[in-house]
Image (cartoon, rainbow over all chains, first blue to last red; front, top):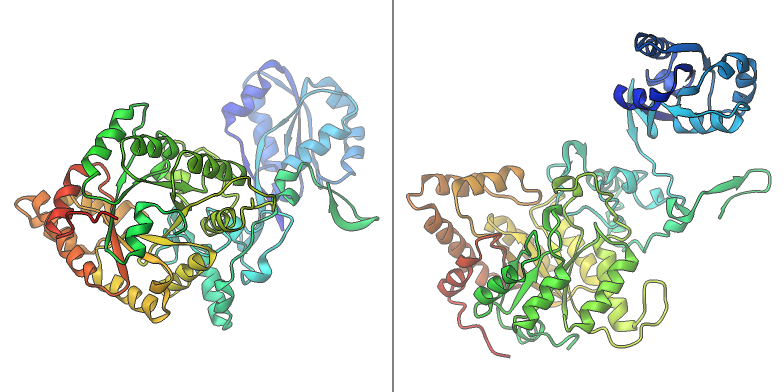
Length: 225
Length: 305
């Protein structure tokens, strides 16, 4: 499981940096390195771009796992070069950006250079697919372990819409119809009758609609609102 | 009677029903709806008002329905789950009933990617089957989804869609059964061009006795030109147009007349098909042709019930 990211358009990044003359760049040695969006070579490429626009890069580092709390110590070690900069450019996922901003002693803007896309499953080498919405109330037990919430373009819970054709989603020929996949897998297992049951209304309050979710692993493994 | 609408009365009396579709304008012109209503009033039992069809912003279905109702044309309010969450859907149902709208058709809605606001957030808080169930709960139990009581009656005649031409084909009957179980009273299908495939679906439907539990109306889209036939074959999600229909349109000296001929042939077969209780004509901008199609199909005058 990896957090999949893509690089923001250069104009957007340079827009953030408009008011900054000196920039410190942070990459991530885990997911962003694997995605070729915020590893060493991408950080050095960004450094070159920023310098060629007449700005100064006061320093850079690749934090092994930017979302980890050890990020705090990495920031402390580089405090001098960060202090010298007007802003920090984080070539990490959004969790990395927020971890950096949280632990940064010397308060200054932390700008994201990446868009965080999804939690991906590597279905073939270097190819990732979004397979989980992290909705907080898993339905995989009823859907042959294929999540309709992210793999169906309409997040339908009760079977394929009228746009499923030849195994493809109406949205694109590149998207397999999730409900065709579910149907096929249930069919192979002789469980098709399960698709006749009406799936009840989903409780989105345990998902993104319920406010920020928190968990205390020491206390208990359930979400609290 | 569940809502006592004309559509319900005609269908429950066992007569072959005719409905048509009136798309609202991309603007504020009430006269656009009124003109379509005037055109369709004598040849249809009820008129569907689409809900941001193909994900393009238009006048709301609720407003369009009210305009039709004011001129004495019975509306069918279409509702898609793409644009509204369960709060908004339920409140619009209350509003529709308060305004005397009794027929409601529950749909998923075309994906927002196809429309004029592709960056919109698709809501899909509940799905179309759950919307059917919601209406049934509101009507029969006088309860909201949350379980709280509704004050007043919610007399609605509940519609749903079916697409026998989508995949997986074998599942399409199960999906219909689910919609019936959820509470559908009538079904309007996707456009029928492949009558044989539709007949195979209807055989499976009647074999399960589903035609006795719901009123199935077959969808009809009149074709104006070879270009339209090709476009629907290649680019419209959920619609299946056989090559043979495209070829007929391409070879026709008068494509409009040929289009009407094709549709009349299809209607002729549907009228005699066991379990089919009516037709639903979606003329998408060619509403002028609807009276002629209904007349030539021998479905005029419409019954008075």
